[in-house]
Image (cartoon, rainbow, N blue to C red):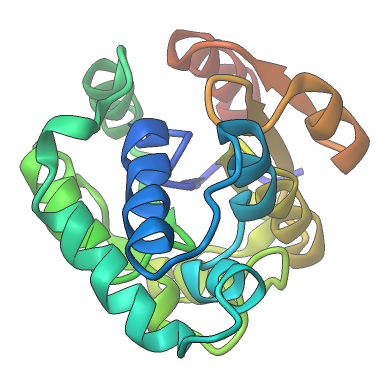
Length: 217
């Protein structure tokens, strides 16, 4: 295996704690348009690793998903108070940068992820940010991850994919990355990540650096 050259992070549920933001946005849009709002557990199960238009296409059949996504994104843009960076993110980013490993973001969130990364002060450390609006296919399809790696100039065999869902792990496997790390603090459970085939499963961002050092050499 090649020396590790790049770390690719998912955004929601991996470096950004957006669980409340996600639920409140779906609650707002669905109730506003006369639909029943399912429980948090059901919402998180349905949205795990998917772009918002997929969920609205199933849940809001009387409306155009694209129009609902616009309202969804506007709500999220106006509610910065409902999300935060996970504890330990900035220390991890700095440590990764210090050993010369490139950082990329591969997310099913739309273009709104860019100001979110800027808001928490990590955007400038990310040499490639590929969001849902830049690709035709979404995770677990390898397209977005391969696009990140292409922009970084790094072969899949020298990269790691880190995410909280089976879609993240699936994308990593499909792209042929060196290994994958599943995070349990998002919407994916340990069982889901194990079934997806994650090489490592951790509970906190602090648990990632020792794994990276092991593979970086």
